[in-house]
Image (cartoon, rainbow, N blue to C red; front, side, top):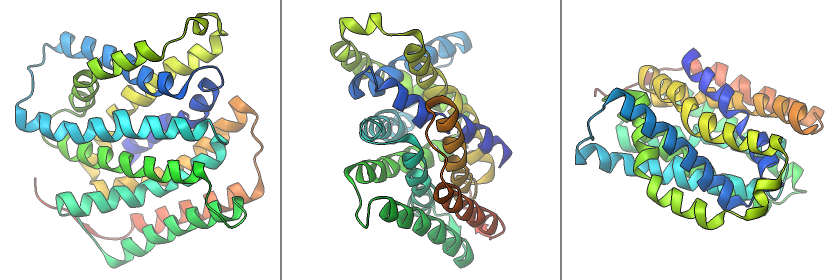
Length: 285
């Protein structure tokens, strides 16, 4: 659980840094560019280890990771950040633990107890209620983008956590970003604009953070936590992410911390504490 928290602490900065980056960069450049930067770092790491190319069976599993957290989630999340606040998005993405649990159950035969399901559904319901309140009774385009982003992310999280039981978590994310490097590099090149070279340094700092930490180093901890503690249980740590995002959004973007944000984030975290105590029967590797 603690290893997972380190990863989520890093991911808590993702939305504020993305919101900052899309103020001057296009969503395509931010989402594919950060994956390109991560791919370069992964290439260096793999070269340093002299790690062999994984077998085709493993590469096929990595395609779910690439589609989920290297391409799908970053692009949809970046589009959403171009339309609304990162603090709102942070609470909406509290939907991800429930989706990760569902993927873990369907693909890897994890068997959460009824109490665990109740706690997860309760936390997810709180997120949806918050979205409806903030949207005056309707879900916005931003909400739908984030909900679909959560689905892509859950697929990548669950597959990566399971694959990390077979090979090193660091190699899982490294190979995922390296294998997708040609596509990400091409889109980044096409999306690059000359005027980007003239923007203030702090926008580039946010971009570099997204590439090296949100897209790469954060997964060292996150996949390790999922592989050790189980996808269903450790995925609930993601429910802490709204708190981290709210705090970071206030620090870096001066977004207002409202009472309703903390009330809903607090109730969501309460569902973690309940779910953490519930039994999860895990399938053997």
